[in-house]
Image (cartoon, rainbow over all chains, first blue to last red; front, side):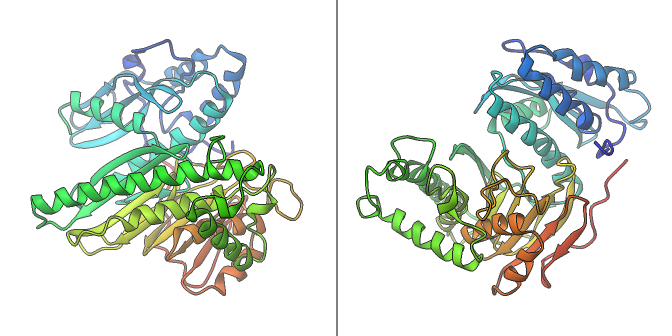
Amino acid sequence: MKRAPIVIAGTLAGLIGVLEFHTTPASLTIGGLPGSSAASAPASIGGAAGGSRASAGAGAAANASPAPGSASQPSGASHTAVGPGVNYYFGVISVKVKVSGNKIVNVGIASLNDSGNPRSQFIDQQAIPILEQEVIQAQSANIQGVSGASYTSAGFARSLQSALHSLGFA
Amino acid sequence: MTADPIQHREHVMGTVVTFDIYPEPDAKDIQLTEVRRQLVRAQAILHRADEVFSTWQPDSAVSRMRRGEITVGEAPDEVAEVLAACATARELSDGWFDPWAMPGGFDPTGYVKGWAAQRALAALSADCIAGAIVNAAGDIASSGRQPTGQAFRIGIADPAAPRQLAEIVELTGAIATSGSYERAGHLLDPWSGRPATRAASASVTGPDLGLADALATAVAVAGEAGLTLVESLEGYEALVIGFDGTRKWTRHFPFAGPIVATGG
C-alpha cells in the first residue's frame, strides 16, 4: 500500500462504539471506515482464510479513533447508527452510517459474515470499498454511478437504509 | 440536486444489477405505474439471460453447449445472436477479446453481462423517463440524461485505490471498465493464455454496453495498443490507467472536467 487514501477526513469518531453484531458472530470485521481501513482491510481479509481475525481491523480502527463527537465535526451534532444484519448474496452484512446535518459523512461495515468462502471474501474485499465510496461520492461529486465496481449489494443498501431511517432520514 | 430516481437492485448473473430510473419532474402517477411495469420486464430480461448463458449453472444452454450436449442450433435463439456478436467483437478487437480462448471452452460471460444490461435498458422506454441507468456491477448502460438536462456523470473507480474515483465522465450511452483488480483471473491474454498485466484498468464508452464491455476487456489486456484500435471505431472511446497511475485516452474520451480531489 503506497498510502492510505483519505476520502473523508476525520470521521473515525464514534463509530467503534456502535459496532454491534446482530446476527451470527461476524466472521470478518473490517475496520470499516472509508478513511482508515484501506491498509488494514486487505490484511484482515487475507487473514480470514485462516479463521480468526475479528480483532485486527477493529483494533486498528479503535487505536485511530478519537473520542466520539470530537473535533472532527466541530459545528453541529453528528449521529451514527448501525443497520440490522441483512442477508445478501454471500452472507449477512450490517452497515453503519454517520450523519452530520443532512449529509452522510461516513459509511462502513459494522459486521460481515461471508461464510469464509474465498470467492465471497474476494468479492467483498473488492466490493465493499466501492459501496462505501458510492454513497459518499454520490453526494460529494454529484455522480449517478461508478464504473469499475465489481459488485454492489442489495443487502448493503437495505442495511444502510434502515440505519438512516433510525436517524430520521429516508 | 436531481430528484430521487426510482431504484431497484436485482440479484442476477452472480452479481447485483442496479436500476436508476429518473422520471421527468412532471410525470403522472399512471405513467410511473407503466415505468414500474417496464422495470419488471427489464428484470425478467436479465434473469432470462442468466438462465441461457450462465456458465455457473450446469443446466444453462451455454453450459450444455460447453459440454457438447447441444449445438447452437438446438440452443435458444439468443445464443446464435450472442455468438455472432462475440465473433464481431473478437474481430473489432483484433482478437484481444476472445471468448473462445477461455479455459473450459467458449465463455461469453464477458459479453453477455453488458448485452443483457443493454437489453434490459431498452425495456425502459416510457415517455416520462428523462434518463435511466442500468449498472451491472460497474458496467453501465444508460439512456437519456438527468431530469435537469445535464448528462449523467459516472465515476471511474481508481484501480490503485478502489475507494476513490480516478476520473468522472459525462456519459452518453454505455461505459464498461475492466481491470486486473476486478476479479482474480478475470482477464486472460488470449495469445498467451496467462493473466493480463498491461493495464491496471481500461474503460470504454460507446453506444452499446455489450461491445463496450468486450472492448474494455480487450484494451485492459492489450494496454495502450488497444487505444489505437478503439480510436478507429466510431462512437467508442477508451481510457487506460497504468499501474503507475498514468492515463492514456482516445481523442474524444468524455471526461467531465477535473480529476476528483483525493486525499484529506
